Length: 328
Image (tube, rainbow, N blue to C red; front, side, top):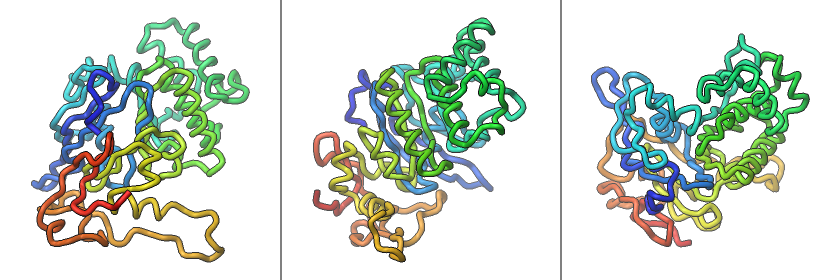
């Protein structure tokens, strides 16, 4: 993933590390992750819960818990932002760099009306007047196809459906015309129909504005519908990356292959058993000399258990960390 030239990258992570200290021991959540989100593209970051996807991007946003320790580099539009002082980071965060989460109800302030929350973004980050900010809030809701937007501005978050709240969060994230939107499981709390609507909305917004998107998900179906490239994470590391179509057509890492086989098949016969990954991901505190996926991998050898495979290029803009990669 780090093959993307830094000059074309909106966001560039190099050897990013995130760890936590708990009861005197270190817990590694993100281990030497390098990736780039290029201008105008969508990068999907896929993996099971606990893979380190969200932690990596919480580090980008400066939203980690107080006991977190970070290392490596995070450059946004060429500027190092990892470890920036809060005042300096706030000039970037919320304006040029924004993030939405899977449950918008926990991100919206419950006792403030939607219009107030939207307008505050422009007042705080752009110094807009309240009247101008209110007009911009109305346009923002129209942009994300919220019905009866003038009425929604006067409502509280609990008066909206889950899909409507997520549209409000997307509108809020776009108020300052950011360069990069980080979307953390933006559809997982929604039903299938609304999921498709949100994915289509993000696709249209990206094409309309040239927005870069980092899409964090465990759902290959969502990623396939939006992402240009995919990075697959396991146990805090990237184990495979490639253009989306190439990876879906011929995954090279056994973990990616098993993840894809777990995607629900609507054509499966009634009563057919849903496929699942064998075993469990390792604990974040676990240390291993070899490949972290080896205990669950059908292709694991003694080499896999003794030596951790490094991420290496196998095709143009494709990388895999595996001693025994699958054939394309």
